Length: 234
Length: 189
Image 1 (cartoon, rainbow over the protein chains, first blue to last red):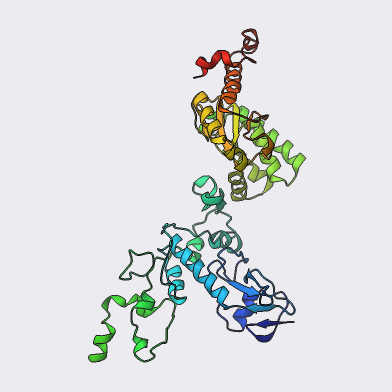
Image 2 (cartoon, each protein chain N blue to C red):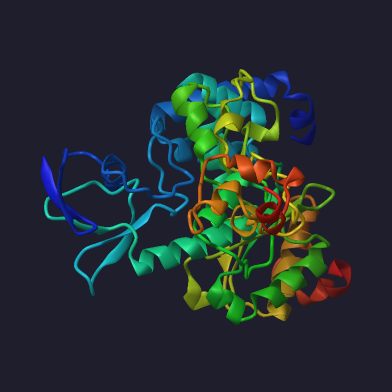
């Protein structure tokens, strides 16, 4: 067991855990895109950034790959972390606005604007599918090829792979494949429907935000009556 | 070699391939890049069947080989020219006029960066640094470095080399084309 300071709390965790696992164990929610419990941590999406070290000389590290250590000081939601995380989500929104997972993250973290030109990529290069194929499916059918801006996930020679058993694991785990719910502003790079539209729960708890995943209210939005009318005609 | 690739290689190529792979694997063991370099040296590029065969022989998944082969600029999956011209487009070379040099090469050879001439004789590529910035701008022709280039100097070097390559062996020397670049300004254009 090692002792560390997690958001000001003195905690003891098993040696060999990552900071992300420790935070999850104590119920602290750190957003991730490229992390999955069954796969090797990869540290690609950077969303799980946390601040470690003494204030003033702290640094940002990816919690999914950072091991816990004796006397480690971790802050998972410091101002610096939150600011960086929001910028990252904004960048992801610009890269892949068609993904529901990313749109949900944006609403959850109150990212309400995109200052970058939308690129409409179909892939965020998180590597989940590649690891899924190799580690869980023993497939080794897909992988990264090329490099830099040309880097992409593909099969050897961009052709149907003999190793592929069409298990669909890559699609199952892909955060970019899940299309966003048909919000009223779907042509925009940012949906924020979960933030902007009143939800049933809001009539009872004004500031409460229910982030069920997927958000049912959000998906049933089309036949919904505006909040003001509902108040008058219950 | 072009036909080899189209229909998957003839009998001779196959025999070659086995020998090359066995020899290279024996010498280099697990070093994938070294084996790929040997294949590239022999074929001028990395034929698909060579990579597939390598995967079967070594047990390295094909996607991992493909990943390495597409990562490095010095590996090519399509046939390259018999004579390879590489221009450095790194920072120093860029500042010292590499783009002008590249344009000049394109004019002399009639191919752009990344292309192979129709007769399969030359290919032109740009790379991001050759590590000899003191000689910037630099081009490498078949492994031979030419530094401190200007468009005029580039043309001179290329036209003389081109004449040498395109003529049957021996004839180039007789006509004195090898060292004197100015004589074929018109021919090269």
